[in-house]
Amino acid sequence: MKAIINGLVWTGIANQPAVPGTVLVEGACIKEVGLDVVLPEGVEKINAKGGWVTPGLIDVHTHLGVHTQGLGNDGHDFNETTAACTPEVRAIDGVNPLDPGFNDARKSGVTTVQILPGSANVIGGETCILKTAGRTVADMTVKAPSAMKAALGENPKRVHGGKGRAPVTRMGVAAVFRQALMNAQDYAERKRAGKLEKRDLGMEQLVPVIEGKRPMRVHAHRADDIMTVLRIADEFSLRLTIEHATEGHLIAEELANSGVRFTIGPTFSSRSKQELANKSWETIQVFAEKNVPFSITTDHPVIPIEHLLTTATFALKYGISEQRMLEAITVRAAEHLDIDDRLGTIEAGKDADLVIWSGSPLQAGTVVRETFINGESVYTN
Image 1 (tube, helix red, strand yellow):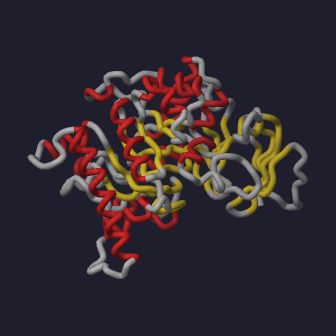
Image 2 (cartoon, one colour):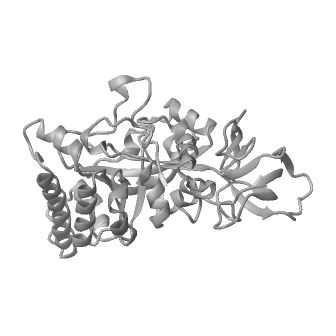
Image 3 (cartoon, rainbow, N blue to C red):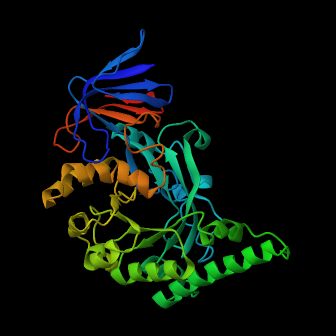
C-alpha cells in the first residue's frame, strides 16, 4: 500500500480546486483520497513536497506504436491502403510496445492513449486504448476494440483517388461510407435470419457499430465534412465522436446541440493542407464558451506526445481556464473514450494512474516528478 502525502490534490471532479490532501493506493487502485485519510501501519509514504497530484493525462487520438518513431517506412503500420474501406484491420495488431514514444509519454505524465489507424481510408479499422507502460500489448490494454475509425475529406480522396479508384470526391467519400454501413446492416440481417453463407471479418467488426454497441470515431476537419458526419450518423443512428474538428468554431451553435463529443487538434501543427486553412486556437476558445464537449490531442507523431500538456498550457493565452484545460486531458478525455468509470479523476475505486508535479501542471517551469500507472511508479525525475 502507498500513500502520496504533502501535495495539492487536483481530483478532476467538477468545480473542485487543488487542495491539500493524501491519495491512498492499494494495489492497482485508488483506495481513498482526502485531507483526513488515516494511513495504515507500514504504508509506503511518497512525499509530494508541496507539488500537485493529478490524474494521469489521457491523449484520446494518437498513432503511438503504429507509427513508430525512428524506423521510417518500416514503422508505418497505421494505414492499410489496399482498399478504401478496411474495417477488418485492428490497430492493436500493429502496435509496437517498444516505440520510444511510450517512454516520452510516461515522462510527460501521459498514462493512457487511444491508438487509431490513420486517415487514409474512409473506414480504417478498429481502435484500441492502452496504458503507456507494459512489456506487451496485453499488459497495456484498457479496451480493445474501443471504436471503429473513419475519415472524411482530403486524405481518402488523395490516397485512393490518386490510384484511380473511388473515392475521388467528397461525394464519393460519403458514398463509400454509407455503402459500408448498409452492407453491415444487410450482413447483420442475414446473420439473424440464419442465411449467412460465410463470415466476413470486416462486416463482423462493423455490425457492433451499426447496432450502436460501439462508437465510430470520424476524422473531419472542414465544417462541411463535420456536418456530413452528423448527417450520416443521424441516418444510421451511430454513436459518434468527431476527431480534429478544425473548423468546428465556424459551426459551434450546431455542434453544441448535436450531443456529440469532439477532439480538437493537433492545433500546434502547420497548415499542411487545404482543410487546415482555418486552423486556429479559436476552436478551443469558442468550444469552451459554447459548452461544446471537447478534449485535445497531439495526434502523435504529428505533434510528439510529450506536447499534450504544452498544447493545454498554450491555450490559456486565449482566455480558457486552467481547470477547463486540465479537464480536457483528464476527465473529459476519459468521457470521450467511455472509460470514465476507471480513469480521468482521482476517486476511490479508480485505476491508480497518477502524476506528481513540481507545481501547477499548466504553469511554465513545472516538471513531472513521478508518474504512476496501476499504482506502480513508471517514471521518476
